[in-house]
Amino acid sequence: MTLLSALLRRTALGVATLFVVSVLIFVGTSILPGDVANIILGQMATPESLAALRTKLGLDEPAHIRYLIWLSDLLSGDLGFSKAGAGTGTVGTPISEMLMPRLINTIRLGGAVAIVAVPFAVTIGLLAAMYPGTRLDRFVTFTTLGLISVPEFLVATLLVLVIAVQLGWLPATAYISGQETGLKLVRALAMPALTLVIVASSQIMRMTRATVLNVMNSPYIEMAILKGVPRRRIILRHALLNAIGPIANVIALNLAYLVSGVVVVETIFAYPGLAKLMIDAVQTRDLPLVQACAMIFCATYIVLIFIADMVSILSNPRLRHPK
Amino acid sequence: MAETETSFEELPDAPPRRRLRLSWSGKLGVVVVAFWMVIVVIGPSISPYHEADILDEALFIVPGSDNPYPETDYQPPSAVAWLGTDYLGRDTLSRTLFGARTTIGISLASTLLAYLVGVTLGIAAAVGRPVLDSSLSRLNDAILSIPSIMLALIIIAAIGSTIPILIVLTGLIYASTVFRIARSLGLDVKVSDFVEAAKVRGEGLWWIITREILPNVAMPMATDFGLRFVYVILFISSLSFLGLGVQPPQSDWGSMVRESLSGLPYGSIAPLVPAMAIATLTIAINLIVDDVSAHSGGRLARRMI
Image (cartoon, rainbow over all chains, first blue to last red; front, side):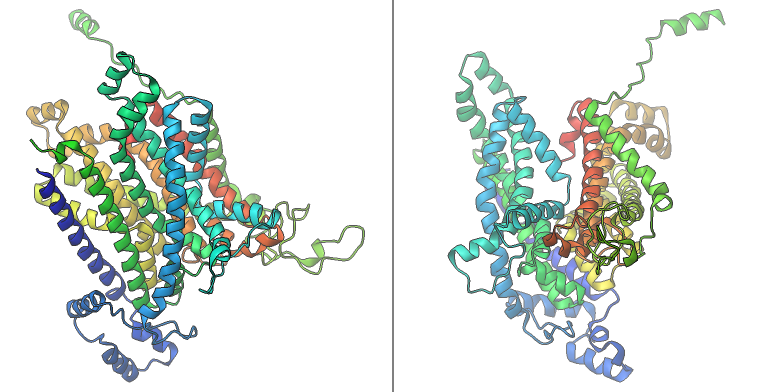
C-alpha cells in the first residue's frame, strides 16, 4: 500500500465515520420517545395542538426524510432553532447565534490547554523515559497514575480549595462576558485551563514515556549502545527521531479525549463554553440544540483522531518510501 | 496397574500453579478495595443517620453557650457529625456510607453488563462467520468513534435518567471496548496450536469456546475488568456530578460533590469527602491492576491502552 492510497483510504474512512455518527446522533435524539412537541406543550398538550405543532416543526415526515432535511440544513450552516428550553427564554432563538460565542470560549480554553500542556507533558515524559528508575521517573509514574485514576472534579475541587479559597489568587468561577481582553481574560481562563492541563498532561506524560521506552528496547538502539554512542546522543539522534510520530499520535489522541474533560470542567467553573451550553440543553431537553452541540464535539473528536492516524502513517518511513 | 503408574511418573511435572504475589502497593490496594466492599454491604446499617435526614438544629451548640447555631448547613466536623454537614444540613458521613452502595452498585452492575455483552459478542465475532465479524466490528467502530460522554448526553436528553437507564446505557457504551479486546484475544487464541489440536480431535464449537478459548482469555480479561470498572466509576460519577446521573434525594458520590460545591468557598469539606472516597477506590483498583499486569510481563498493560 503506497502512502497516497493509505491517506486516501483514511480520508474516506473519516468522512464515512462522520456520516455514520451524524445518523447515530439523529437516531438517538429523534426516534426515541420524548417528542419535542410534547415537551414544548407539556401540561397544555391537547391532541389538536400537538398535531398542529408537529406539522409546524416538520415532525410528521418519516424519519429518513427528516434526517436528510436535518443533514442538508446542517451542511449549509443552518442549525435550526432552539425548540425547547421553556422558561429559559431561548425558544425560537437561532441555534447558530447561541453557539458562536460559546464555541469561541471553548476554543480559547482548549487552545490555552494545548499550548501549555503539550510542551510541558512531552518534556517531562521524555525526561522520565531518559532516566528510567530514577527518583524523577518514579515520581512522574506515581503522580500520573494517581491523577488519571481520580475524577476531573476532584482535581478541580482541590485547586479551588487551595488557589481560590486558601490563597485567594484567582476567582473560583470563570465569568466571561465577551468584552475581556488581556490579563482579565487570562484570569478567567486560568482555573479551568489549569485543571484540564493537569488532567491532559498526566495522560500525555505516561504515554510519551511508554512510547520512548518502547523505542529504547529496539535492536538498533542496542546496536548504538554496543558501539559506544553516548546516552544523550542515542536519545536525541536515534530514539527521539523515531518516537516523534508516535508522540504526535499520542498528543492528538489526548486532545481528543479532552472532550469529556471539557464537559465536566466547564460545569464546575460555570465557564460559558459549548459544553456548558450542551449540559443545559440536555437538562431542558432542547433536542435540536443537543444535536448541534453533539455534532460539533463528535466532529472535533473524529478530526483529531483522524490527524493522529495521519501522523502515524506519515511518520512511518516504510509507508513514506514504498519499495 | 503398576506399569501405568511408572509411565505416569515419566510424564513431565505439571507446571506449578502460578500464585500471585502482590507488592506492598498491590496489598494496600486490596485492603482499600476490601474496605469499600464491606461498606457497600454494611454501610447503611452502621451509619449514624439516614441519608435523607436533615439534622436538627438543637444538635449543634455554639461552644461556651447553650445557644444552637442558627444554621445547620455546611457545619464543620464535630462530635455530632464527624465529617460535617452538607448544603441542606445532612450528615456527610452517613451520606457517604449510603452513597457507597449506590455508586459501587451501579458501577459494578454496568461493568458486569458490559462484560456479558462485550465478551459474548466479541467471542462470537472471533469464532463466527466473517459476515458476523465484519458487521459487528463496523457497528462497534461507529460507537467507539463517539466520545462516551457525548453518547450518554444524547441518550439522556432523549429519554431521561433513571438508575436502570443509567446501568444499561453505561453497560452498552463500555461493552464496545470490551468487545474489541475480547475479539482480538479470541482471534489470537483461535489460531493457536491447542485449538487446532482440539478441532482435529473433533471437538465441537461450544466445547472449544468454553474449554479452550475462555480459560485462556480469562486472566487478561480479569485485569481489564479492573480497569474498566475504574472507568465506569469515573463515568457514572461524572454524569451524577453533571446532574444527569443518580437523582436526589438518593445519595451518590458524584451528585454529593455537585450538591455541596457551593460550600467550597466557605472551606466546607462536604464536597471533598465523596470526591476522596471515589479517588481512594479508583486509585486502589489501579494499584492492584498495575501490580497484576506487571507480573504477567507487562504484555497486558500494553494491550489495554
